[in-house]
Length: 284
Length: 248
Image (cartoon, rainbow over all chains, first blue to last red; front, side, top):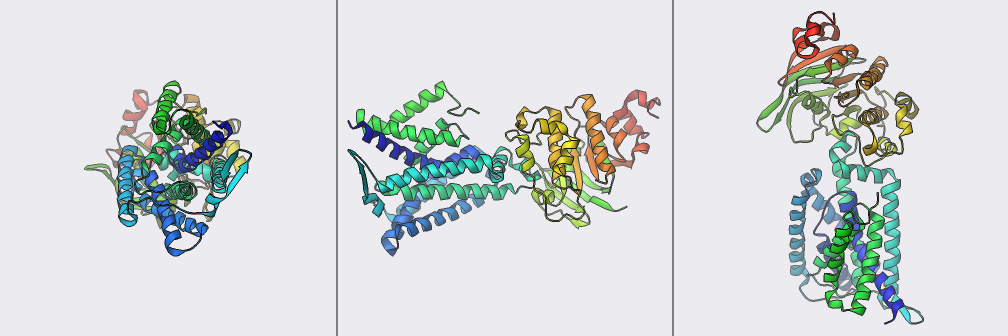
Protein backbone atom coordinates (compact mmCIF):
# COMPACT_ATOMS: atom_id res chain seq x y z
CA UNK A 1 0.00 0.00 0.00
CA UNK A 2 1.26 3.47 -0.91
CA UNK A 3 0.67 5.20 2.42
CA UNK A 4 1.40 8.69 1.10
CA UNK A 5 -1.06 8.23 -1.76
CA UNK A 6 -3.72 6.91 0.64
CA UNK A 7 -3.13 9.94 2.85
CA UNK A 8 -3.53 12.29 -0.14
CA UNK A 9 -6.67 10.40 -1.17
CA UNK A 10 -7.94 10.71 2.39
CA UNK A 11 -7.36 14.46 2.51
CA UNK A 12 -9.06 14.84 -0.88
CA UNK A 13 -12.07 12.79 0.26
CA UNK A 14 -12.06 14.60 3.61
CA UNK A 15 -11.97 18.07 2.10
CA UNK A 16 -14.90 17.02 -0.09
CA UNK A 17 -16.81 15.83 2.99
CA UNK A 18 -15.96 19.02 4.88
CA UNK A 19 -16.88 21.20 1.90
CA UNK A 20 -20.30 19.53 1.59
CA UNK A 21 -20.80 19.77 5.37
CA UNK A 22 -19.97 23.47 5.71
CA UNK A 23 -23.47 24.74 4.92
CA UNK A 24 -24.97 22.34 7.45
CA UNK A 25 -22.34 23.29 10.00
CA UNK A 26 -23.56 26.88 9.82
CA UNK A 27 -27.21 25.89 9.71
CA UNK A 28 -27.15 23.45 12.62
CA UNK A 29 -24.11 24.70 14.47
CA UNK A 30 -24.53 28.43 14.27
CA UNK A 31 -28.26 28.87 13.61
CA UNK A 32 -29.64 25.70 15.34
CA UNK A 33 -31.69 24.74 12.30
CA UNK A 34 -31.79 21.49 10.34
CA UNK A 35 -32.21 20.83 6.64
CA UNK A 36 -32.47 17.19 5.71
CA UNK A 37 -32.87 18.21 2.06
CA UNK A 38 -29.18 19.18 2.11
CA UNK A 39 -28.11 16.06 0.19
CA UNK A 40 -30.77 16.49 -2.47
CA UNK A 41 -29.79 20.16 -2.82
CA UNK A 42 -26.25 18.93 -3.43
CA UNK A 43 -27.60 16.55 -6.10
CA UNK A 44 -29.75 19.24 -7.72
CA UNK A 45 -26.90 21.75 -7.85
CA UNK A 46 -24.67 19.15 -9.50
CA UNK A 47 -27.36 18.35 -12.10
CA UNK A 48 -28.07 22.00 -12.86
CA UNK A 49 -24.34 22.50 -13.49
CA UNK A 50 -24.18 19.35 -15.66
CA UNK A 51 -27.31 20.33 -17.61
CA UNK A 52 -26.00 23.83 -18.41
CA UNK A 53 -22.58 22.48 -19.37
CA UNK A 54 -23.97 19.85 -21.73
CA UNK A 55 -26.86 21.82 -23.24
CA UNK A 56 -25.61 25.38 -23.54
CA UNK A 57 -21.96 24.95 -24.28
CA UNK A 58 -20.93 27.65 -21.81
CA UNK A 59 -17.87 27.06 -19.61
CA UNK A 60 -17.63 25.31 -16.25
CA UNK A 61 -17.14 28.47 -14.10
CA UNK A 62 -20.26 30.16 -15.50
CA UNK A 63 -22.32 26.97 -15.29
CA UNK A 64 -21.19 26.59 -11.67
CA UNK A 65 -22.13 30.22 -10.94
CA UNK A 66 -25.62 29.77 -12.44
CA UNK A 67 -26.11 26.62 -10.39
CA UNK A 68 -25.10 28.49 -7.22
CA UNK A 69 -27.53 31.35 -7.96
CA UNK A 70 -30.34 28.86 -8.64
CA UNK A 71 -29.72 27.17 -5.29
CA UNK A 72 -29.63 30.55 -3.52
CA UNK A 73 -33.12 31.25 -4.90
CA UNK A 74 -34.22 27.80 -3.73
CA UNK A 75 -32.87 28.69 -0.27
CA UNK A 76 -34.99 31.86 -0.21
CA UNK A 77 -38.06 29.88 -1.28
CA UNK A 78 -37.52 27.23 1.41
CA UNK A 79 -37.07 29.84 4.11
CA UNK A 80 -40.20 31.74 3.06
CA UNK A 81 -42.19 28.50 3.23
CA UNK A 82 -40.82 27.52 6.63
CA UNK A 83 -40.65 30.97 8.22
CA UNK A 84 -42.84 30.29 11.23
CA UNK A 85 -41.27 26.90 12.02
CA UNK A 86 -37.86 28.54 11.84
CA UNK A 87 -38.78 31.46 14.12
CA UNK A 88 -39.98 29.03 16.80
CA UNK A 89 -36.94 26.77 16.19
CA UNK A 90 -39.28 23.79 15.92
CA UNK A 91 -36.63 21.24 14.96
CA UNK A 92 -38.90 18.20 14.81
CA UNK A 93 -41.26 19.81 12.31
CA UNK A 94 -38.33 21.27 10.38
CA UNK A 95 -36.79 17.81 10.12
CA UNK A 96 -40.01 16.34 8.71
CA UNK A 97 -40.65 19.26 6.35
CA UNK A 98 -37.09 19.28 4.99
CA UNK A 99 -37.02 15.49 4.62
CA UNK A 100 -40.20 15.78 2.56
CA UNK A 101 -38.75 18.64 0.59
CA UNK A 102 -35.69 16.52 -0.19
CA UNK A 103 -37.85 13.72 -1.57
CA UNK A 104 -39.77 16.25 -3.71
CA UNK A 105 -36.47 17.58 -5.08
CA UNK A 106 -35.36 14.03 -5.84
CA UNK A 107 -38.62 13.25 -7.63
CA UNK A 108 -38.51 16.45 -9.68
CA UNK A 109 -34.85 15.86 -10.57
CA UNK A 110 -35.67 12.28 -11.59
CA UNK A 111 -38.43 13.55 -13.89
CA UNK A 112 -36.24 16.25 -15.42
CA UNK A 113 -32.90 14.49 -15.70
CA UNK A 114 -33.77 10.78 -15.66
CA UNK A 115 -32.15 7.97 -13.68
CA UNK A 116 -28.97 7.42 -15.70
CA UNK A 117 -25.56 8.44 -14.33
CA UNK A 118 -23.88 11.51 -15.80
CA UNK A 119 -20.48 13.12 -15.51
CA UNK A 120 -19.56 16.77 -15.10
CA UNK A 121 -16.53 17.16 -17.30
CA UNK A 122 -14.02 19.85 -16.43
CA UNK A 123 -10.48 20.44 -17.60
CA UNK A 124 -9.27 20.47 -14.01
CA UNK A 125 -10.34 16.84 -13.51
CA UNK A 126 -8.07 15.81 -16.41
CA UNK A 127 -5.01 17.72 -15.14
CA UNK A 128 -2.79 15.47 -13.01
CA UNK A 129 -0.24 16.83 -10.56
CA UNK A 130 2.47 14.28 -9.77
CA UNK A 131 5.09 14.25 -7.01
CA UNK A 132 7.13 11.03 -7.26
CA UNK A 133 4.66 8.18 -6.88
CA UNK A 134 1.95 10.43 -5.41
CA UNK A 135 -0.57 12.21 -7.59
CA UNK A 136 -3.81 14.17 -7.49
CA UNK A 137 -5.82 16.26 -9.93
CA UNK A 138 -6.08 20.04 -10.17
CA UNK A 139 -9.79 19.70 -9.31
CA UNK A 140 -8.87 17.89 -6.07
CA UNK A 141 -6.32 20.56 -5.21
CA UNK A 142 -9.00 23.19 -5.88
CA UNK A 143 -11.45 21.40 -3.53
CA UNK A 144 -8.82 21.20 -0.78
CA UNK A 145 -7.77 24.85 -1.04
CA UNK A 146 -11.30 26.24 -1.40
CA UNK A 147 -12.49 24.18 1.59
CA UNK A 148 -9.72 25.52 3.82
CA UNK A 149 -10.39 29.09 2.69
CA UNK A 150 -14.16 28.76 3.16
CA UNK A 151 -13.79 27.33 6.67
CA UNK A 152 -11.35 30.10 7.59
CA UNK A 153 -13.65 32.82 6.27
CA UNK A 154 -16.74 31.35 7.93
CA UNK A 155 -14.93 31.02 11.29
CA UNK A 156 -13.69 34.61 11.09
CA UNK A 157 -17.11 35.96 10.13
CA UNK A 158 -18.93 34.04 12.87
CA UNK A 159 -16.46 34.79 15.66
CA UNK A 160 -14.93 38.14 14.80
CA UNK A 161 -17.57 40.25 13.06
CA UNK A 162 -20.81 41.95 14.07
CA UNK A 163 -22.60 39.97 11.33
CA UNK A 164 -21.37 36.76 12.95
CA UNK A 165 -22.56 37.95 16.36
CA UNK A 166 -25.96 38.72 14.80
CA UNK A 167 -26.18 35.16 13.42
CA UNK A 168 -25.22 33.73 16.82
CA UNK A 169 -27.70 35.96 18.63
CA UNK A 170 -30.55 34.94 16.31
CA UNK A 171 -29.54 31.29 16.74
CA UNK A 172 -29.71 31.62 20.51
CA UNK A 173 -32.98 33.53 20.69
CA UNK A 174 -34.61 34.95 17.54
CA UNK A 175 -37.34 36.66 19.56
CA UNK A 176 -34.93 38.46 21.86
CA UNK A 177 -32.85 39.52 18.85
CA UNK A 178 -35.86 41.52 17.61
CA UNK A 179 -35.58 43.74 20.69
CA UNK A 180 -32.00 44.52 19.69
CA UNK A 181 -33.40 45.90 16.40
CA UNK A 182 -32.44 42.75 14.48
CA UNK A 183 -34.80 41.47 11.78
CA UNK A 184 -34.52 37.79 12.72
CA UNK A 185 -36.55 36.61 9.74
CA UNK A 186 -34.18 38.30 7.29
CA UNK A 187 -31.20 36.82 9.15
CA UNK A 188 -32.73 33.34 8.78
CA UNK A 189 -33.28 33.93 5.06
CA UNK A 190 -29.63 34.96 4.77
CA UNK A 191 -28.52 31.83 6.64
CA UNK A 192 -30.61 29.55 4.40
CA UNK A 193 -29.26 31.31 1.31
CA UNK A 194 -25.72 30.90 2.63
CA UNK A 195 -26.33 27.20 3.26
CA UNK A 196 -27.76 26.75 -0.23
CA UNK A 197 -24.87 28.66 -1.82
CA UNK A 198 -22.30 26.63 0.11
CA UNK A 199 -23.89 23.29 -0.77
CA UNK A 200 -24.08 24.34 -4.42
CA UNK A 201 -20.45 25.42 -4.35
CA UNK A 202 -19.53 22.07 -2.81
CA UNK A 203 -21.54 20.26 -5.47
CA UNK A 204 -19.94 22.00 -8.45
CA UNK A 205 -16.48 21.40 -6.94
CA UNK A 206 -16.86 17.85 -5.62
CA UNK A 207 -19.36 16.27 -8.04
CA UNK A 208 -17.02 16.32 -11.09
CA UNK A 209 -14.88 13.69 -9.29
CA UNK A 210 -17.54 10.97 -9.61
CA UNK A 211 -20.62 10.19 -11.77
CA UNK A 212 -23.77 11.94 -10.56
CA UNK A 213 -27.18 10.32 -10.09
CA UNK A 214 -30.54 11.83 -9.21
CA UNK A 215 -30.84 9.17 -6.51
CA UNK A 216 -27.76 10.45 -4.68
CA UNK A 217 -28.00 12.75 -1.68
CA UNK A 218 -28.81 10.46 1.23
CA UNK A 219 -25.20 9.47 1.86
CA UNK A 220 -24.13 13.12 1.69
CA UNK A 221 -26.69 14.00 4.40
CA UNK A 222 -25.53 11.15 6.61
CA UNK A 223 -21.84 11.98 6.26
CA UNK A 224 -22.62 15.66 6.81
CA UNK A 225 -24.59 14.85 9.94
CA UNK A 226 -21.75 12.76 11.32
CA UNK A 227 -19.24 15.55 10.67
CA UNK A 228 -21.38 18.24 12.32
CA UNK A 229 -22.17 16.09 15.37
CA UNK A 230 -18.64 14.72 15.84
CA UNK A 231 -17.13 18.14 15.27
CA UNK A 232 -19.26 19.47 18.08
CA UNK A 233 -22.40 21.37 17.15
CA UNK A 234 -21.42 25.01 16.78
CA UNK A 235 -17.74 24.24 16.24
CA UNK A 236 -16.70 25.19 12.70
CA UNK A 237 -13.08 24.19 13.25
CA UNK A 238 -14.18 20.85 14.69
CA UNK A 239 -16.23 20.12 11.57
CA UNK A 240 -13.19 20.72 9.35
CA UNK A 241 -11.00 18.44 11.46
CA UNK A 242 -13.63 15.67 11.58
CA UNK A 243 -14.23 15.98 7.83
CA UNK A 244 -10.54 15.47 7.15
CA UNK A 245 -10.25 12.61 9.68
CA UNK A 246 -13.28 10.87 8.17
CA UNK A 247 -11.70 11.22 4.74
CA UNK A 248 -8.48 9.63 5.99
CA UNK A 249 -10.48 6.91 7.75
CA UNK A 250 -12.43 6.20 4.54
CA UNK A 251 -9.26 6.03 2.47
CA UNK A 252 -7.31 3.75 4.81
CA UNK A 253 -10.31 1.59 5.74
CA UNK A 254 -10.98 1.08 2.02
CA UNK A 255 -7.35 0.17 1.36
CA UNK A 256 -6.77 -2.00 4.41
CA UNK A 257 -10.17 -3.66 4.87
CA UNK A 258 -12.79 -3.07 2.17
CA UNK A 259 -14.52 -0.03 0.65
CA UNK A 260 -17.86 -1.91 0.81
CA UNK A 261 -18.40 -1.34 4.54
CA UNK A 262 -16.94 2.15 4.91
CA UNK A 263 -20.27 3.82 5.81
CA UNK A 264 -21.01 1.16 8.43
CA UNK A 265 -17.50 1.62 9.84
CA UNK A 266 -17.97 5.41 9.96
CA UNK A 267 -21.11 4.93 12.04
CA UNK A 268 -19.33 2.52 14.35
CA UNK A 269 -16.73 5.27 14.92
CA UNK A 270 -19.54 7.82 15.46
CA UNK A 271 -21.19 5.61 18.09
CA UNK A 272 -17.95 4.88 19.90
CA UNK A 273 -16.91 8.54 19.85
CA UNK A 274 -20.24 9.88 21.07
CA UNK A 275 -20.38 7.33 23.90
CA UNK A 276 -16.92 8.45 25.02
CA UNK A 277 -17.39 12.19 24.31
CA UNK A 278 -21.06 13.14 23.90
CA UNK A 279 -20.28 16.81 23.21
CA UNK A 280 -18.04 15.96 20.22
CA UNK A 281 -14.83 17.93 19.70
CA UNK A 282 -16.40 21.08 21.13
CA UNK A 283 -14.40 22.36 24.05
CA UNK A 284 -16.00 25.73 24.83
CA UNK B 1 -48.43 67.27 28.42
CA UNK B 2 -47.09 65.72 25.20
CA UNK B 3 -47.21 61.96 25.34
CA UNK B 4 -44.15 60.19 23.97
CA UNK B 5 -45.88 56.80 24.02
CA UNK B 6 -49.57 56.14 24.22
CA UNK B 7 -51.97 53.24 23.81
CA UNK B 8 -55.55 53.56 22.64
CA UNK B 9 -58.04 50.74 23.19
CA UNK B 10 -55.22 48.21 23.36
CA UNK B 11 -56.55 44.66 23.61
CA UNK B 12 -54.51 41.45 23.61
CA UNK B 13 -55.99 37.99 23.13
CA UNK B 14 -54.38 34.57 23.37
CA UNK B 15 -56.68 32.03 21.77
CA UNK B 16 -60.07 32.57 23.42
CA UNK B 17 -58.62 34.43 26.44
CA UNK B 18 -58.36 38.18 26.64
CA UNK B 19 -55.28 39.12 28.64
CA UNK B 20 -55.51 42.91 28.20
CA UNK B 21 -58.87 44.69 27.80
CA UNK B 22 -59.27 47.99 26.01
CA UNK B 23 -56.39 49.76 27.75
CA UNK B 24 -55.69 53.48 27.33
CA UNK B 25 -52.50 54.90 28.78
CA UNK B 26 -49.89 57.52 28.10
CA UNK B 27 -46.32 58.26 29.13
CA UNK B 28 -45.23 61.88 28.92
CA UNK B 29 -41.74 63.29 28.40
CA UNK B 30 -39.56 63.06 31.48
CA UNK B 31 -42.04 60.90 33.38
CA UNK B 32 -41.52 57.61 35.15
CA UNK B 33 -44.77 55.71 34.93
CA UNK B 34 -45.32 52.45 36.79
CA UNK B 35 -47.85 49.69 36.13
CA UNK B 36 -48.82 47.63 39.17
CA UNK B 37 -50.99 44.58 39.41
CA UNK B 38 -51.17 41.08 40.83
CA UNK B 39 -49.62 38.05 39.13
CA UNK B 40 -51.56 37.34 35.95
CA UNK B 41 -53.08 40.85 35.82
CA UNK B 42 -51.61 41.31 32.33
CA UNK B 43 -48.74 43.68 33.14
CA UNK B 44 -46.11 41.92 31.03
CA UNK B 45 -48.62 41.26 28.25
CA UNK B 46 -49.42 44.97 28.17
CA UNK B 47 -45.82 46.15 28.03
CA UNK B 48 -44.95 43.47 25.44
CA UNK B 49 -47.88 44.60 23.31
CA UNK B 50 -46.59 48.17 23.40
CA UNK B 51 -43.28 46.85 22.05
CA UNK B 52 -45.10 44.64 19.51
CA UNK B 53 -43.23 41.70 20.99
CA UNK B 54 -44.21 38.35 22.40
CA UNK B 55 -42.82 34.86 22.77
CA UNK B 56 -46.25 33.54 21.73
CA UNK B 57 -48.65 34.55 18.97
CA UNK B 58 -51.20 36.93 20.49
CA UNK B 59 -53.86 38.82 18.58
CA UNK B 60 -53.42 42.52 19.34
CA UNK B 61 -55.90 45.26 18.47
CA UNK B 62 -55.96 48.99 19.20
CA UNK B 63 -53.33 51.61 18.52
CA UNK B 64 -49.86 52.34 19.86
CA UNK B 65 -48.45 55.79 19.13
CA UNK B 66 -44.78 56.77 19.48
CA UNK B 67 -44.21 60.51 19.27
CA UNK B 68 -47.60 60.79 17.57
CA UNK B 69 -46.81 58.18 14.90
CA UNK B 70 -48.99 55.10 14.82
CA UNK B 71 -46.60 52.15 15.13
CA UNK B 72 -49.25 49.47 15.66
CA UNK B 73 -48.37 47.66 12.45
CA UNK B 74 -44.62 47.77 12.89
CA UNK B 75 -42.77 44.56 13.87
CA UNK B 76 -40.76 44.67 17.11
CA UNK B 77 -37.36 45.17 15.47
CA UNK B 78 -38.64 48.27 13.67
CA UNK B 79 -40.14 49.65 16.88
CA UNK B 80 -36.79 49.06 18.54
CA UNK B 81 -34.93 50.83 15.75
CA UNK B 82 -37.45 53.66 16.05
CA UNK B 83 -36.46 54.26 19.67
CA UNK B 84 -38.96 52.16 21.63
CA UNK B 85 -36.57 50.20 23.81
CA UNK B 86 -38.02 47.27 25.71
CA UNK B 87 -36.18 45.29 28.39
CA UNK B 88 -38.33 42.20 28.96
CA UNK B 89 -38.62 40.10 32.08
CA UNK B 90 -36.48 36.96 32.31
CA UNK B 91 -34.03 36.26 29.52
CA UNK B 92 -33.07 39.69 28.21
CA UNK B 93 -29.43 39.28 27.13
CA UNK B 94 -27.66 36.68 25.00
CA UNK B 95 -26.02 34.17 27.29
CA UNK B 96 -23.63 32.78 24.66
CA UNK B 97 -22.32 36.21 23.67
CA UNK B 98 -19.91 38.24 25.76
CA UNK B 99 -20.92 41.53 27.37
CA UNK B 100 -18.94 43.27 24.63
CA UNK B 101 -20.72 41.31 21.87
CA UNK B 102 -24.14 41.95 23.40
CA UNK B 103 -23.48 45.68 23.35
CA UNK B 104 -21.92 45.60 19.88
CA UNK B 105 -25.16 44.21 18.43
CA UNK B 106 -26.79 47.57 19.03
CA UNK B 107 -26.84 50.09 16.19
CA UNK B 108 -28.19 53.60 16.56
CA UNK B 109 -30.89 54.50 14.06
CA UNK B 110 -30.24 57.30 11.55
CA UNK B 111 -33.04 59.53 12.84
CA UNK B 112 -31.64 61.13 16.00
CA UNK B 113 -34.43 63.66 16.57
CA UNK B 114 -36.21 63.07 19.87
CA UNK B 115 -33.79 60.38 20.95
CA UNK B 116 -31.75 60.28 24.12
CA UNK B 117 -28.23 59.54 23.01
CA UNK B 118 -25.84 57.85 25.42
CA UNK B 119 -22.19 57.35 24.65
CA UNK B 120 -20.45 54.13 25.54
CA UNK B 121 -18.55 55.86 28.34
CA UNK B 122 -21.75 57.35 29.80
CA UNK B 123 -23.34 53.92 29.90
CA UNK B 124 -20.23 52.41 31.48
CA UNK B 125 -20.28 55.20 34.08
CA UNK B 126 -23.83 54.16 34.95
CA UNK B 127 -22.91 50.47 35.10
CA UNK B 128 -19.15 50.24 35.79
CA UNK B 129 -19.42 46.52 36.57
CA UNK B 130 -20.07 45.85 32.88
CA UNK B 131 -16.66 47.18 31.94
CA UNK B 132 -15.00 44.78 34.37
CA UNK B 133 -17.05 41.90 32.97
CA UNK B 134 -16.85 42.89 29.29
CA UNK B 135 -15.16 39.65 28.18
CA UNK B 136 -17.50 37.39 30.15
CA UNK B 137 -20.40 35.61 28.48
CA UNK B 138 -23.95 36.50 29.44
CA UNK B 139 -24.31 33.08 31.07
CA UNK B 140 -21.51 33.96 33.53
CA UNK B 141 -23.23 37.14 34.78
CA UNK B 142 -25.30 37.46 37.94
CA UNK B 143 -28.97 38.43 37.74
CA UNK B 144 -28.13 42.03 38.58
CA UNK B 145 -25.35 42.20 35.98
CA UNK B 146 -27.66 40.79 33.32
CA UNK B 147 -30.25 43.43 34.20
CA UNK B 148 -27.59 46.13 33.92
CA UNK B 149 -26.43 44.75 30.57
CA UNK B 150 -29.99 44.69 29.25
CA UNK B 151 -30.52 48.30 30.29
CA UNK B 152 -27.14 49.34 28.89
CA UNK B 153 -28.06 47.77 25.55
CA UNK B 154 -31.34 49.71 25.52
CA UNK B 155 -29.59 53.01 26.33
CA UNK B 156 -26.93 52.58 23.62
CA UNK B 157 -29.71 52.15 21.06
CA UNK B 158 -30.75 55.79 21.55
CA UNK B 159 -34.17 55.39 23.19
CA UNK B 160 -37.11 57.74 22.88
CA UNK B 161 -38.70 55.75 25.69
CA UNK B 162 -37.64 52.84 27.87
CA UNK B 163 -39.97 49.98 28.83
CA UNK B 164 -38.76 47.92 31.79
CA UNK B 165 -40.53 44.71 32.73
CA UNK B 166 -39.78 43.57 36.29
CA UNK B 167 -36.31 45.13 36.58
CA UNK B 168 -36.09 44.17 40.26
CA UNK B 169 -36.90 40.46 39.92
CA UNK B 170 -34.14 38.28 41.32
CA UNK B 171 -32.10 41.22 42.60
CA UNK B 172 -30.76 41.56 46.13
CA UNK B 173 -32.72 44.22 48.07
CA UNK B 174 -29.69 46.55 48.02
CA UNK B 175 -29.48 46.28 44.21
CA UNK B 176 -33.19 46.99 43.68
CA UNK B 177 -32.78 50.49 45.06
CA UNK B 178 -29.58 51.00 43.02
CA UNK B 179 -31.20 49.93 39.74
CA UNK B 180 -34.29 52.05 40.33
CA UNK B 181 -32.13 55.02 41.30
CA UNK B 182 -30.29 54.72 37.98
CA UNK B 183 -33.65 54.59 36.20
CA UNK B 184 -34.76 57.70 38.09
CA UNK B 185 -31.57 59.52 37.09
CA UNK B 186 -32.37 58.75 33.44
CA UNK B 187 -35.90 60.07 33.88
CA UNK B 188 -34.48 63.24 35.46
CA UNK B 189 -32.47 63.75 32.25
CA UNK B 190 -35.79 63.67 30.37
CA UNK B 191 -36.02 60.04 29.23
CA UNK B 192 -39.57 58.72 29.74
CA UNK B 193 -39.74 55.29 31.36
CA UNK B 194 -42.58 52.80 31.77
CA UNK B 195 -41.79 50.29 34.50
CA UNK B 196 -43.70 47.17 35.44
CA UNK B 197 -42.67 45.69 38.76
CA UNK B 198 -44.08 43.46 41.47
CA UNK B 199 -42.16 45.50 44.03
CA UNK B 200 -44.71 48.29 44.22
CA UNK B 201 -43.30 49.68 47.44
CA UNK B 202 -39.89 50.29 45.84
CA UNK B 203 -41.31 51.55 42.54
CA UNK B 204 -43.59 54.06 44.26
CA UNK B 205 -40.53 55.67 45.82
CA UNK B 206 -39.19 56.57 42.36
CA UNK B 207 -42.19 56.79 39.96
CA UNK B 208 -44.23 59.88 39.06
CA UNK B 209 -47.45 58.08 38.14
CA UNK B 210 -48.96 54.67 38.61
CA UNK B 211 -51.55 52.66 36.69
CA UNK B 212 -53.26 49.84 38.56
CA UNK B 213 -54.10 46.81 36.42
CA UNK B 214 -56.58 44.11 37.43
CA UNK B 215 -57.49 41.18 35.17
CA UNK B 216 -56.21 43.07 32.15
CA UNK B 217 -58.12 46.29 32.83
CA UNK B 218 -56.87 49.64 34.12
CA UNK B 219 -58.79 50.18 37.37
CA UNK B 220 -56.83 53.08 38.79
CA UNK B 221 -54.45 55.83 37.69
CA UNK B 222 -52.90 58.77 39.44
CA UNK B 223 -49.74 60.38 40.71
CA UNK B 224 -47.47 58.14 42.75
CA UNK B 225 -48.15 60.29 45.81
CA UNK B 226 -51.91 59.90 45.49
CA UNK B 227 -51.75 56.21 44.63
CA UNK B 228 -49.75 55.54 47.80
CA UNK B 229 -52.97 56.31 49.61
CA UNK B 230 -55.23 54.26 47.35
CA UNK B 231 -56.88 51.57 49.46
CA UNK B 232 -56.37 48.89 46.81
CA UNK B 233 -52.65 49.65 46.65
CA UNK B 234 -52.34 49.82 50.42
CA UNK B 235 -54.09 46.50 51.00
CA UNK B 236 -52.66 44.54 48.11
CA UNK B 237 -49.06 45.80 47.93
CA UNK B 238 -48.01 47.86 50.89
CA UNK B 239 -49.29 45.63 53.72
CA UNK B 240 -51.06 46.24 57.01
CA UNK B 241 -48.46 48.62 58.42
CA UNK B 242 -49.02 50.94 55.50
CA UNK B 243 -52.78 50.84 56.05
CA UNK B 244 -52.14 51.94 59.60
CA UNK B 245 -50.32 55.01 58.38
CA UNK B 246 -46.72 53.82 58.26
CA UNK B 247 -46.14 55.24 54.82
CA UNK B 248 -48.09 58.49 55.13
